[in-house]
Structures are given as structure tokens and as C-alpha cells.
Length: 327
Image (cartoon, rainbow, N blue to C red):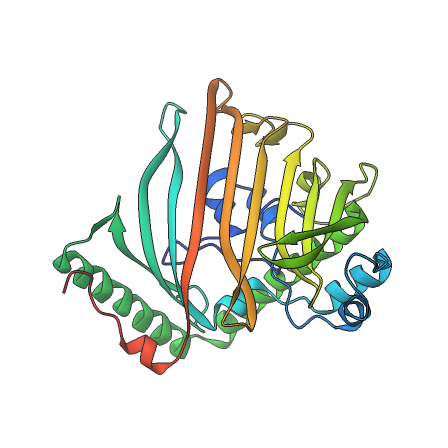
């Protein structure tokens, strides 16, 4: 699931339904598959929005949930596809586990993220640790290593045999199939209700409740986690884009039959999106607050947030403009 730069593959954004975005995968293993299916809806139809804007928000009837879900699903795009159009900054603390099972937070690290059309070659360029810029020499060394890795990967693709190419294409087809299975599970698992309206950062939103149906049979590995979480999502009424999601575990979530770890009931995750350049909604913040056990016996309690900012449209200029921090 991890690419050469340490970035995790992002599943398609599926409306509003699961815990969080891709950052959870670095923290809680399989729960990322549930979370990455969550946020990032693009190009949604406007019929519901137009109907709502035709009368004052306070007087407008709540939309039919079936129509809303249909419009959201129709406009889905993968977060990976959306983020490939932009460079951005990512600031986070990774959750680490010691050899003895102690769970702790690592230092604050800030990355400049440069997308790539070559699978697995998105570059997360570490530029600061705990607010201090990396030395120029270390940055140059990291840049050279990444550049050589990309060249090696391109050369490998050019030399690959028909059999190797078929295997690579089969892996990609499998990834796409798994993404679709998660999408299908999200819409199957949750009983979705439109429960009201709220203003979020100055914009009218529809508030939806997400209650799992425990008896639903799921197709993906992520489905079993979906059925153990409930929450709410806020959908921007003007364009039916998801702007915020809050989810809570209603049962303990176990990993590796509970031998690897357990996240306790009551743990929460939040994902927030922001409108970039008045044209596209992209990740802004992801937060997890959890208690549990690691490696059977080690208790943990943690709260960590990942921030996404400084989005810039990706083009030839931005690929060349990689200036070491501090120069």
C-alpha cells in the first residue's frame, strides 16, 4: 500500500461515509481502507442545489435523501486523481509503535508534496522537522535519491517484458476493483438520513446522519470496519460537496484478530475539506482521537492531526521550482 516516497494509495472519495482520509493508514493500519473511501466528491450535479437556492434556506424543504445520494455518487472521483493536479504541503505527526508495543507520536514533519503520473512516484519532500528546516545538504541528497528512483522506475517500465507488463496491469486492475468494492460497501452499509441544515465556514450545508446496518454483507476488507462506525457528514448545499465528516466507533475495532491492536469504542475521527481557488474541494485537516491496545497488552491514548495547505496547480513550472529550504 505504500509507494516509494511513503505516500499511501488513496482510495476513491466516496461521499461522506467512513472515518477519515488517507492519513489514518499511517496510524491504524486497515482502518485507512475504510477512511480513504470517504471524502472528495467532484463535479456533482446541481439539481438539488438549484432547488434549494430557489427559496430562502430557512424555508427550503430538506431534499430527498435518495436523490442526494444519487447525485453525490454520480459525481465521485478518486482523491488521488484530484490531488494529482496540485502540489501542496502536508504537516503531521506519525503514530509509532516500539518493539515492545508502546504507542507514541513522532516529531512534527512537514512535506512538500509533488504529484506524479508514474504510479508510486508521488514525491513527499521532507522540508521541516519540529519547525526546523532540513539542512540544504540533506535536502539535496533526498532530491537526488528520489530523482534516481524515478529514472530507475521509468527504465524498468521501458524494459519490462509482456509478462511483466501484464502483471503490472493486473495489479492496477485489482486496485481499481478493490476501490469499487469499498464504494459499493459504503452505500450498502449506511442508512443515510438528511437531518437538518447548518452553516459551516459561512456556507449553508445539509447535515446527514450515517448509521450502519450491521446485518449487511460486505465485499471489501474495509466493510467490517464500516459497520462498526457511525457519524455525521456536512454537504455543501451549493454544489453537493462534502465539507466535513465526523465518525465514532460504536464497537471496538480489532486488527489481526486483536493480537496486533484494538481501537476502543468511542474513538473518533474527523475529516475537513476546503475550497481551493474557488474551483475544487480538497483535504484540509484530518484528526484522530483514539484509545486502545497495541500488541495485546500495551494501552494507548492519542490525539493527532494532519494538516494540508498551500495548494498550487501542478504544472511544468512547479516541477522545476524545487528550491531547498533555507537557501
